[in-house]
Each structure stands twice: as C-alpha cells, then as structure tokens.
Image (cartoon, rainbow, N blue to C red; front, side):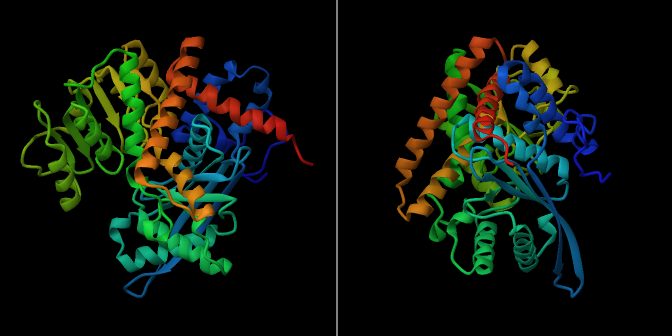
Length: 433
C-alpha cells in the first residue's frame, strides 16, 4: 500500500498521520483527542478532523543567479473545507516539514471556526532559508511555487496569506502569477497584499492587535490590571512587535524580548517604539543599546505577569514550562505549547490563551480583505479595527463561557467551539457520493 493511501479500516490512520510521529501534527492529534469527549453525537465524525482533505507536495526548480538550477520542496495542505474555502498562510523557512504544514492547516480550520468566519483551514510552505536568496531568486521561487499549487488554490477554493518570512511583496507576486495563469486579474486569490493591489488597511497589524485584544479581555477576567504589568515577548515582528506596542500603550512594561538574534532585558521596561525602529533597521533585537543582554534559556523564567510567545511552534515544552512565572500566557505563534506543557502551566496557575483564538486577528482581517476585493468597496482603517475588536471580543466571551461551563482550559474550550461548528457543517452537508 502507498504510504499516502487510506487504509481499509475507518479507525486506523495511515502511519504518517499517527500521533507517534509527533512533531506538530502529533500535538494537534492529542488536542483532538482531548476535545472528543465534549463533542457529543458529533464525535462520530471526529475522524474527519484527523485526516487532511487534500495534501499537495510539489517540486520547485528555479534558475539561480549563478546559472545553476536549484530544487526546493513545497507544500499546500487543505485540512477541511466544510465551512468554506481553505484559508491559511504560506511560510518560507528552512525547517518546514509536512507534519508542520498539516498541523498549521488543521489549526486554521479550528481558528476560522472559533471566530466564525466562513473559511476552512489550509496552509502552505516551502523548505528554504529566504535569507540565502537574492530578490530575483526569491521572486522566481514564489512564482514557480504559485504555479505548482495553482491547481488547488483560487478565490473561492483556497486563499493563501503571509506567514513566517513572507510578506506583502510575496503576496503580490503570488497574485500576479495566478492572475496571469488564469487570464484575468484575481485580487481575491491571496490576502495580505499591498493596499494598492486590493490589500486591506489594518491587515499588517491585525494579528498583533488581536493578540492584545483577547489578552486584555483575559487579563480583565482574572483581575490582572494592565497598568504596570510586566510583559515578556518572544518574536518581535508583525505579531509580537505590534502586541508589545499595544500593551505598552495600555500602560504595561515590556521587560524582555527574544528573537532569532538574542534576548534583551530591562526591568524598568524597554522603549518599545525605539526597539521597533532598531529591529526594522538591523533585523533583530540584538545590539539594542538601552537594554541588557541575557542568555536565551533564561527568557522563560523572567519575572512577568504576561508572556507572549510569538515566534515558531514548539517553544514551550515539558522541560521549560515549569520555569514560566507569568500569570497569563498569550499564544501569538501557532502551536508554541505542547500538551504536556499545557498541563504543567495549568497546574501552576498560568492561564493560557491558545493560538486558535489569540492570533485569529490576522485571518479575521484577511476575511475583511477578501470581502472587500469581491465587492470592490474598501473600508477605512478605523472601521476595520472596530470590526476586528468586536469579533475578537465576542469570540473570546463565548469561549470563556464554554470553559466555565465544562471546567476545561481555554484551549479545549476553543476546540469545542471550533470543532463543533466544523463537524456540524460536515454532518449537514452529508457525504457524496
């Protein structure tokens, strides 16, 4: 049997989908197992959540500047489309794997359902370190990847967006490539585009703004005042940087920041606007003059009230979760906390606001962008931010209520809400043929 073939039993997953192959996909499967007892009659459909609808692996050959030909491996996974077209970002990173992209696509399914936007979940990635490519090589890689996955994406089929190491320019190249291939301008094929090409105001800051919005709501529910609260942030790009800026504006003190260049600390609080300028100009937090340098491993036990992991998945695990001293952990990144770490944090009284609600601001404004592209009518940034805050607050309130009702973590509560909506749609649609 092919390793990708579906086995005869409806209850046996193919080996590459099983939890023993841990990685991000294994973490996701454990999360589904934890939520299954709360799904009631819909649990008969739970296998739907454990099997991606469609997985595409592509070879991406490109001409390099030196005349050689290089090959890169790319992925696009559509986890579930019961509630609408696939939606999820594309990341360019040297450590991208199929397990990672599958898990990210599944978390997108849950995330989109949790905030009740009419999308399914999808994700894409290319295993490449984009820092090693020239601009021309990066463009050729992007366009070839887009052409290879063009058979499954489209404005009403699957809509990519920026993710790790991709940005507005990458989305512009993707939109143009797809449009040329189909013979018409299709602005709605991607979101996170430049505003001049149909992008939405507020999209760049949306994920960080969502992290702040639900973080502030969670703090209010546990009686944690933001004024004077100490915040530690891992990752200081569009997510962590914007979230840190908004927390600082609310009166909190950002005392520690870590990224791929190092870790900095200042007990009285970092100058966040100056740090954002430094990161923009130098590419990282290292070398910021008005701060002390600390060992990367020490970041996890910094004295703080709020911890925001906003980098990559798998950062908080059984080995370091016990060191976390925060009262509130807000997941700006996708999948930063393992199930074992979740249990340790809960036992230590740390409230975790999970990724599938905390960082849903990006896809919410992506939905706004998609709607604006279809209507060719664009909203003001104030309108967009107000709609985003309203949706995020309403979604969090519903999840908080479910958590209290079932006496479960916010992660399990978010999965209850999201998975119930996905499986209800699956059941109503039925099976064809």
